[in-house]
Image (tube, rainbow, N blue to C red; front, side, top):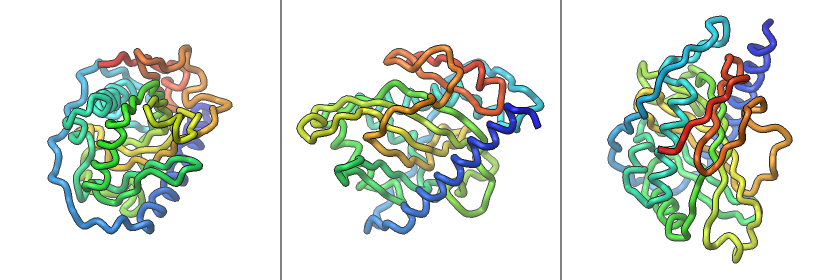
Length: 246
């Protein structure tokens, strides 16, 4: 077996298992909310050139190209950073939505919901009120498992979906007073590549730095000016791309 395909398969298998565990945690937590948000308008992904992958590698839908998805996520983070309601366009509605969880290591704070409701939107609003700014994005993209159950199931229809590992950093006005030193966040997510809607987000804050980066052979590290994106198992693992802020 080709080494790139082997390691790519291993990374995605671990990603799927970890995301499944996070999904079960979300499913069993129960947020006590019955409110449903109106279906957001689909977010239009940035019009970026498509770069074909190695045809002998794992199949990844054309619309899930790493550069394209990184552009979508940067637009989402920029909207969050500005407190722009257009950020809600990037969050999938029911029944496609499968869960959103953000945990604060050592504080017990965060949010965990199974529906895109006021509890989630209230959390995002409160973080913006604390001046939270998200950036330094790095993602590793792979095809989402096609299962009828689990974290990547949902109302995608025939639309292509992708799973991705991500790492981001943050600044906020209340971190020091809460005794939070680490500004690193890490997680796994699922996205509808056609609409740009995120249907699964499972992330923790307060992580220690990785020994290896998500895109280990990337030439550069993510900065406040551009993201780094790759696709393990494809030629992109050795040719991670830089995606500038919108």
